[in-house]
Image (cartoon, rainbow, N blue to C red):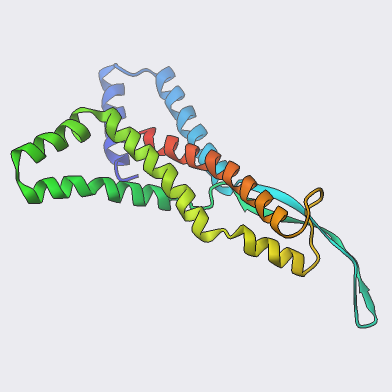
Amino acid sequence: VADMPNATRSVIQLIGSGQMGIIELGILMVLIVAIVAGVIVVTTGVRRVPVQYPRQMKGRRMTTGGRNYLPLRVNQAGVIPIIFASSLLMLPSMLAGVIQDTRVESWYRYLFQDNRYVYDSLYAGLIIFFSFFYTAITFNPIEMAENMKKYGGVIMGVRPGKATAEYLNRVMTRITLVGSLFLAAVALLP
């Protein structure tokens, strides 16, 4: 977003100089809309795990059990992994500026400025790591399984307790992988 005015100015200059035509501009606009739509879909995406609750007697009334859904977000961490990864990758630049040693500066320049693949690989790896790290901190499958067991909720085909916690952990790991890979791809796209 911060670079949007410069990008718009560059596109206008390319159109004015004849280097970009209407067809290319249309393709660019379609790509921008597709990327924004993809980000919205993944950000709001939820894996709904069906949970069955039994009928219960409360006083003289019988409450009906029913089927509810446990919503597990595809991108549980949001943009926090991107913020952490970019902050961590700024650290070598700051250290190179503080130390003022030619060997450190040349090492930094070689790894992070001249060799863009190393920087991009580290950036993507850190985004994926922090996605899993943040999800592990905020999502506790053991506590969730205990609460479901306490209120009589079961996931069909999965035993209550430890098996439910393992199932929730396995599902969350899979959807976090997809979400973190998508987040890394969106961060590296520019």
